[in-house]
Length: 494
Image 1 (tube, helix red, strand yellow):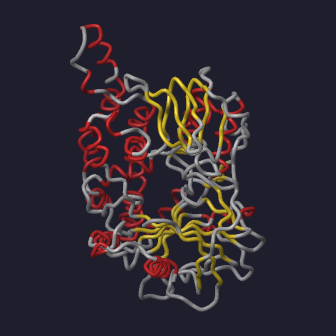
Image 2: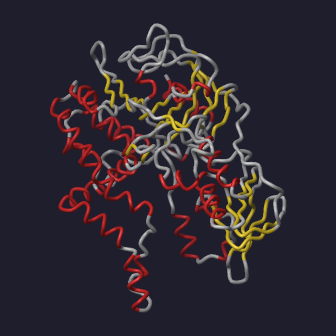
Image 3: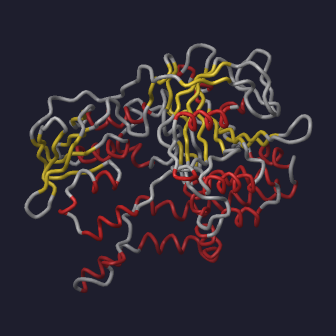
């Protein structure tokens, strides 16, 4: 779905079961925004390297380039740095992580190399970390709370299945062994299979050495390799059915296999997406996800500080129009929208492949088959992110708020709504695949202001709803207009 909604809620009337009570929402125009930008000197005419776009990946690249001794400039078209990792005040007084909203997958080596804590990064761990309130015909309705205390987690699971409670530690250990085996691959260069049989004998031997991390991972998995291969290739529903019988647990775990992807729990390969979400690390704890103090923009700010401290120049409001090419087709710099030319020996793009190769580089300079492959890339997302400002914490019938209105343990969690069973997730996917927004969308609701109260005025909170599935184009080829957007926002927040 194009664009995002900035929503503000007032609470009142009673609503169904686990939903927050009485959110009446209206669209608001964007307010003042926070700009996290490292101050830079005047833009030079020439650098050793230019990075197009100041998303967090571009900022990390700039920090490492400058660290290696290359004079580096980062050029960002927006007024705020960070790309998807930004903090913006889209409702006055409320600071939102407008796109990405949790931290886990940033590699530990980057933390250490760039000294991000010294540059202001502060992470807020969550325990418990997952809460699934159920919509069911019983009083009171049940909920599932998962945390780092295994005994308490097993007690929660036992509400639904004693067998699952006993199996859960073994499942966690199984996934943990896979993560430990595959984790080193994330820091190793990908294997260039096309180059393995090319070149002289010494070159081929050197190329074979790139297989070493992959072979080590296979040896670490040992006889369990076929089972782990199945995790990477099978539908997550098949994997979870092998381990568990209770639907609320399977659906809660399955959310990490489909979140952000146009996939159902029954889609082959969805198990890999789950692995991707459990491979993260937060301050030494595997698989943990946490909030960033100050919002995700504070992460981008810390990376930018690490780069500028080493001498990198970072500029906002500097939109690149196109890449300068030499006679042999090599990148020689960039041209800004105002006509300014910036020469460089290297050009890195933090923009998408489509923008980089279809908009910033003349098509005639690229092989036709390469351009065709770029055009065929499908980067459409089924997610609509809704940011909500509220004047009190949401209350759930499965876990009502305290009388004093103070936050309870589950308020710091990723709160999973419409996750009573995997079939419900599949139904939501099927509706979107047919061009209709999910009537009961899968929602991951987070309230970072519970742990970071400075994000909102006293007594108020910022709420993030990561919702899916929404087709990029509606049935019949209709585009998303204001009426369709508002109707879906009402579905996700009523």
